[in-house]
Length: 91
Image 1: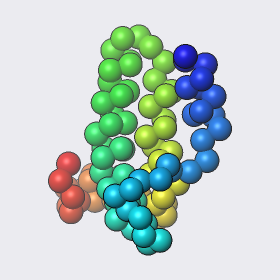
Image 2 (image 1 turned 180 degrees about the horizontal axis):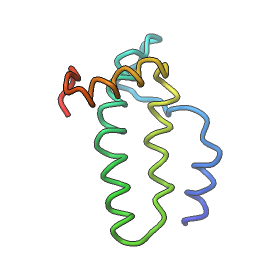
Image 3 (image 1 turned 45 degrees about the horizontal axis):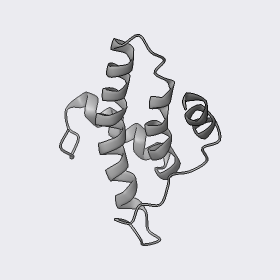
């Protein structure tokens, strides 16, 4: 089972289809994935697996999802806003 998951993570190319965002413009999808996947799921996944002494590499999937959708300039801006305490989203 773990081998199958590792293969899927290695062969991952782009974010899966999300029915909540059916339109061509993926701006909201990008922002939502940044909020949900990176800020909560990625860190929660790392914390749980690291706490159990397991490899946390499967958690990188969450990071790949938003990185495939979002321009890096946006991500860098949001990361800076989080550090400054001026990020517009609810964390």
